[in-house]
Amino acid sequence: MHELSITQSMLDLVLEQAKNAGAKEVGKINLVLGEMTGVVDRAVQFYFDFLSKGTAAEGAALSFKVIPTTARCRSCAKDFKLGEFDWTCPHCQGNNIEIVGGKELFVESIEVE
Amino acid sequence: MEIKVVKDIMGANDQIAQKNRQLFDSNQVFVVNVMASPGAGKTSLILETIKRLKGKVKVGVVEGDISSSLDAEAIGKEGVPVVQINTGGECHLDANMTSTALGSLPLGDIELLLIENVGNLVCPAEFKLGEDMRILISSTPEGDDKPFKYPLMFHEADAVLINKIDLLPYLKFDVDAFSKAIKGINQKVKVFPISCTTGEGVDRWVDWLLGQVGG
Ligand SMILES: Nc1nc2c(ncn2[C@@H]2O[C@H](COP(=O)(O)OP(=O)(O)O)[C@@H](O)[C@H]2O)c(=O)[nH]1
Ligand SMILES: [Mg+2]
Ligand SMILES: [Zn+2]
Image (cartoon, rainbow over all chains, first blue to last red; front, side, top):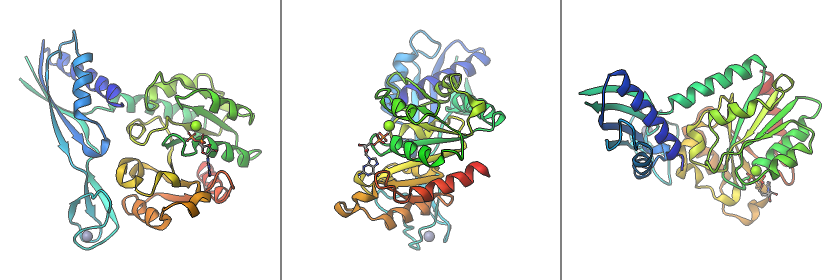
């Protein structure tokens, strides 16, 4: 459900950037979404279609680059995808890990006319 | 034409959170964002904490639970300033709602502000409020797999309170494995097994909190 406010923030950001660039229309929005944020792309699309009506971004295509939750072992320095039931390192069975991917939530670029 | 943006979507919220933080700092208020699922024991923990801090620290409370004003009333009975935020159905508090609520609190007369976030393990993690500390209550009946399902919450928390340990004899909940998993991804986290019902472990949490407020 946090997608409603997140989509509104995203739209505000996009419209501001488009305005600053003197653009009339936004054709595409490239988003980067970390898996860990729990933000659901379909929900963002749904709210976007609704919120963007009558704005310069109406009808813009949304592209989602989803970043998996990635951990780095602090013992052996190898990266691995965080498991769903177990957070031990598959390489050395270490427990001490750092999250290095999956928290992203940003607008990478927009395509405007 | 393609325009590189690379801007955080939460930027607007973060800016307001920063303003809240300045307001808290100028009034010397230490702020704790209390997060958990519905029913995990947020209100119970706030009540137990207030009771133990009487005469030591001046506490204020922001109630963000959507359900009703029942929690705010229970807390008001303890004689501390409390303000209820009506989130209008939103599943989390955000910096702007918090900012609006602050107007109705005597900040100059509060040293510790406890903010009960909306019961939810996903959404509140993204929204900074301007807090100094984030705590997460995970209660034993919810199961010990919660860190794996909601890693962001456990990753961001300064302290995790395992509540309802009085129920452990009836449940399959491995406190040690649970603590070990959280500490593995979150080096700074403190883990406190507690029971708001029996009071077990609550003093240890309150002592630690006092140290944080003072420091
Ligand atoms: N057995 C047990 N029940 C508890 C404990 N802490 C809270 N509860 C009960 O759990 C329910 C929900 O607590 P509440 O504080 O309202 O949760 P909140 O929704 O997170 O604010 C209430 O019925 C409490 O009495 C505890 O340590 N042990
Ligand atoms: Mg409550
Ligand atoms: Zn390793």
